Length: 315
Image 1 (cartoon, rainbow, N blue to C red):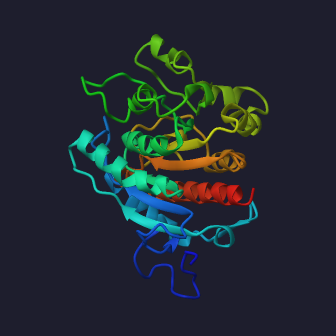
Image 2 (image 1 turned 135 degrees about the vertical axis):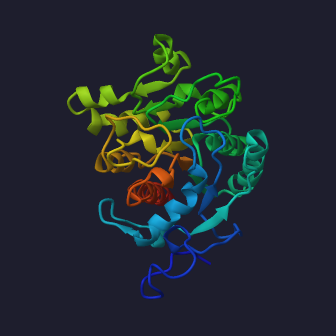
């Protein structure tokens, strides 16, 4: 059996449960290529909170997305069997317990060979997702779209939050920094030393300044990302603050001077050919969103991620 989204011929887009793209809600993994999974946790946030409502907002914004992408020529229904797995259980206020629950819920999906796209949630939910994926696939190449490096050691004495997630993942051996890259870093920092964190930990970096100041750099970025990860199994984490707040205001720690929606989609489309095992889109906070434009952007990013998986299915 192949799982596909409901079409307009079957029912109007505003009718029924709001699963992602009106995919079947299914917790079985047989015959499934991709699972969309909600990770509704935001106790790891350090400034604005409310990303626990992000998965629901992204699903609601996805209702008018269609399977065929004319920009890439990919028809998701022809190539993928995809389901909305629903949300995993969390315990509000309990970071370590929630992370353990998320890792336990995600690991069987990776064990069964599914590509998993997580809907956050604050960025701390990437840690249990990386844990689950790495337990099956080994250390992963990480492609991080973000305005922040998330390499703090601690925040007010707490070592698990959305600003420490990448450092914890490195320490635990979930990612290989020599095959990983951070894209879009920008904004003010606590001190000069923090600006060197990424390269000190072994990451390649394409900062916003790198991509803006050099002619052709944005167009060449996907090639550099592909060269960095090589043939390694890879994980994409996409923090919506990568995008300029003019296009994505509904997030926890917005940074001006970012990328447009169009530039973002073009960057993602250029990553075809990488062996992806998982993705996430994090830090959507509906309370700060206007006309759901952040949620719509996040949903469209997920749509592009599905397209990347679909392309890999035909290699």
